[in-house]
Length: 102
Ligand code: FES
Image 1 (cartoon, rainbow, N blue to C red):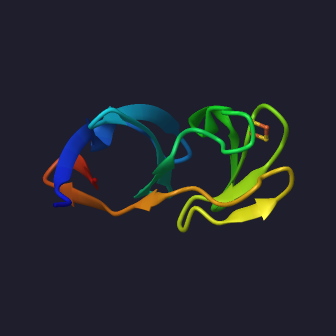
Image 2: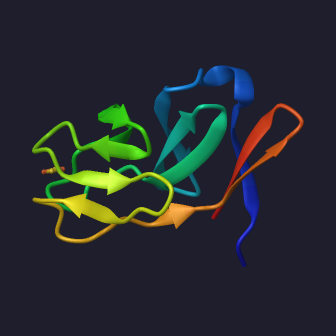
């Protein structure tokens, strides 16, 4: 059953920052977009690029390897060569803890 797991503290990511966190063996890209946190799979389904290291523009992240674009709020693929979207995870803030639902 899905559960929320602490992956970071709110102070760990300034607005505009991202980092890869490991949750239950999954690599998840965690983003702080203007104070709201979002989580999607870190691994680009094209060739495995790390989306947490991509450039963030608004709610879109560009894969650093070949430029596929994903929406960080939904995981939807927005630009080639993304073969499909990525999983998106619910995020909640508990005090200063950032928790991801896996
Ligand atoms: S690995 Fe992400 S676009 Fe190729």
